[in-house]
Amino acid sequence: MNALAARRRHPAAIALLILVGLLITGGAYSLIAPKEASASAAQTDNVANGKNLFLANCATCHGTGAQGTKSGPSLYGVGAAAVDFQMGTGRMPLTEPNVQAPAVGKNIKFSQDQISDVAAYIASLAPGPAIPDSKYTTIIQPGTQENNEAIARGGEIFRVNCAMCHNFAGAGGALTRGKYAPSLQGVDPKHIYEAMVTGPQSMPVFNDTNISPAATQQLISYLKTVESQPEQGGMSLGNLGPVSEGLFAWTFGIGILIGCAVWLGKKAA
Image 1 (cartoon, rainbow, N blue to C red):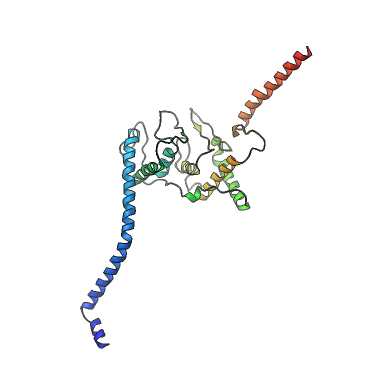
Image 2 (cartoon, rainbow, N blue to C red; image 1 turned 180 degrees about the vertical axis):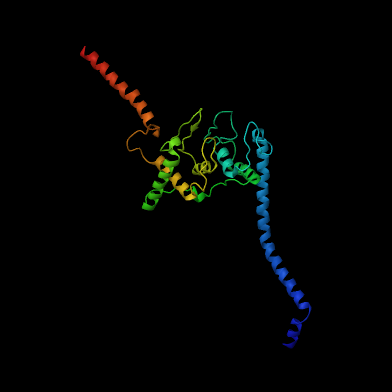
């Protein structure tokens, strides 16, 4: 016991204790550091791949440093969400100069991995809206009272903020100077969210400060509920409202009445 106590008082004991502590700390760090390094390396590779794709496909309009040119705006601060929306819907790269970039449906030029790489590169240039969390783009299914109330709140938010351009059912509508509010039917929920937080073309920005992520999820769920519900009254006529209904009535309804009048007149004669 006395020998052990003497060793503890030895001048080298403190140095030995520090050395053991450093070895334990270094060993623990070495178990964690490789994962972080590999993740960082993977992210660096994504950014590098995205930069190469950008230079090959986007730099002509947006500049080699994404600083913008006369043909395209600067992409500093647009964030990964804007890239994922524009490229994921096929609006970019732009097929031809026009007042508005149209979506191309399923004929997307790039894979999702390539789009993610370009988004990572643009996001590395300056802070901007990120791609939304999947939990906020998951559709709330109707059925329970809680879910039905959430969808109803989403409908209120949509009618107050969006229906004046996109129509109450998201069927779209005409704007000025050849522009239009596109139909939201069949659009991926993620792309609806990204359009709200980035404000593409003529659309205003509805970021998470204006409309919370939970409220945005409710809004998207309302649109998808309207899209999937059956038409109890018969033909929807595109859900375009009184214009399409009036045109249908004049073209077919009055046309049938005139045809009947002519037929009855010939029969009476």
